[in-house]
Amino acid sequence: MTPELSWNLADDLDQMLAYPFMVTALLAGTVVAVVTSCVGWFMVLRRESFAGHTLAVVGFPGGAGAAWLGVATGYGYLVACVLCAVAIATLPPLARASGIGAGGGGEESAVIGTLQALALATGLLFVSLYHGFLSGLTGLLFGTIAGVTTDQLRLLVIAAAVCLAALATVGRPLLWVSIDPESARAQGVPLRLVSTVFLLVLGVAAAGASQITGSLLVFALLVAPSAAAFQLTARPAAGIAVALTLALFATWAGLACAFYSPYPAGFWVATFAFGSYLLASAYRAVTDRSRRRVAA
Amino acid sequence: MRNAAAIVGGRTVWSDVCLDVAPGEFVAVLGPNGSGKSTLVKSLLGLTPVSGTVEILGARPGRNNKRIGYVPQRRAFDGGLRIRGVDIVALGADGARWGTPMPLLSKLIRPHRYTERKRRIDAVIDTVGASAYADRPIGRCSGGEQQRLLIAQALLRNPQLLLLDEPLDSLDVPSQAGISALVRDICRRDGVAVVMVAHDVNPILPYLDRVVYLAAGHAVSGTPQQVITADQLSALYGVPIDVLHDRTGRMIVVGQPE
Image 1: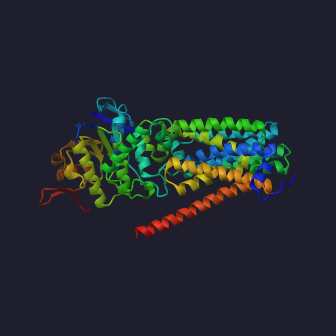
Image 2 (image 1 turned 180 degrees about the vertical axis):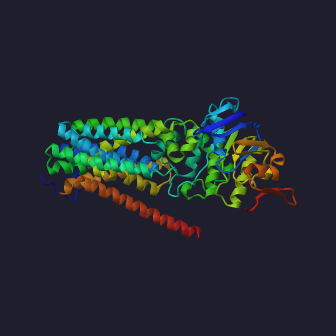
Image 3 (image 1 turned 120 degrees about the vertical axis):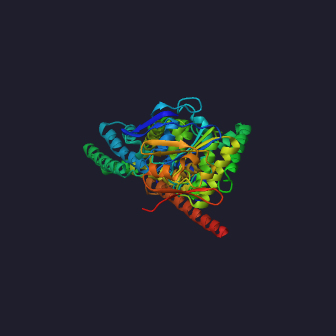
């Protein structure tokens, strides 16, 4: 089975969708892109990228442990990420909700960093216990295109629905808490509850994305589209919409390229996500310059 | 506020504080660093527990925060924060409500409410004179512009009481004058009581109805003429301070060099 790329895009699409595993992968990718872009936008706004990265990395021992125990890796990712989210949530609130100027989370970021190293090492232990072969390891870390089963897809859809519902419930207070925690608290927003809910959502989203991109490349979908969106617009609603579009584009294009090329899906998805960020930054640099010229 | 005392971290920050604020009054809370000015404001919001009797808008602190506009003490917004000023102002209306705002959807489903809300936001931004830069990312606004937008956010709830914690901090002299005049207008025209924490009394001194000086755990309050005298201030701060009067009768507070 070596798919041939023709110049007829419709034919290419038909050829790709003829394989059930590709359909599953595309569906899973779509679900993941929708969730990660919405969650990622808030994550970038809250400057919790580091926490998000940790959650994703922690998914690796989870997935490896699940493989060792003979459970679907998806469950392993989910359990590990949610546990880690709870752990981070118990850290002092100031460290996490570093909205604007709260800053000074240096010590806590060191704690989180230590946790990351431990997570990676534990994951490696599980892989060796499992007598894992190298492809299993790379699959966990960098994702596999054919790795998604229909069972995993079902789990993914349920997790995504829970994520989006939770995010939609706390959306407005979360925005306020992220920008201006003091004012929000004075108006009765429960800071701690909102931040904890968000971390849990972030954990579930990272776990879901790990199945497509692997633990290490989750960031491609969590950060890059949202970071690009912040370059393009300062409107919250438009920002999320842009992030969503870019994430969908990166996922679809990435999976398609992986199908027609010998290179892994994770690489393609990350490359497209990075490319969109690069273009967005370039666009902003140009518009900023022209605006300055108009002002001058 | 009657015989109120605040204890933070085992230390009595201040005690025996008595304070009355009437609607439409402009009150300044002054005092040296660490004297508990911000604590006073937070105790009015119910964010810091206090002993004694505190009644605010006819209830215990924290009960009526919806009718209080609060602008916390602030470091400036991060320059990279890419959220429009108008979005931050809008949070004042319903930021504490659960749910997620979907401007496009609400425009389609409830166009009347959408335009009404937009009109209110525009009106309040116009009140603080921030229309020119409300659509810019707030990170790109100057300190004074950010402060105006935050006051707009607090005003959006039509508060009966406005609590401002060092709004003039780290602003240049024209911005200080601009914000002071704006707060005075809100106070006089709309009958909103204002309690402003300030470091430097001079920019707001001409507008004040009453001042509260906090120092060394105690408070002195009264009209500016009563409290702002060289003897009182020197005793409160423990360093020589002079109060000068210029030709128009304006008072200026100056510290003596060491």
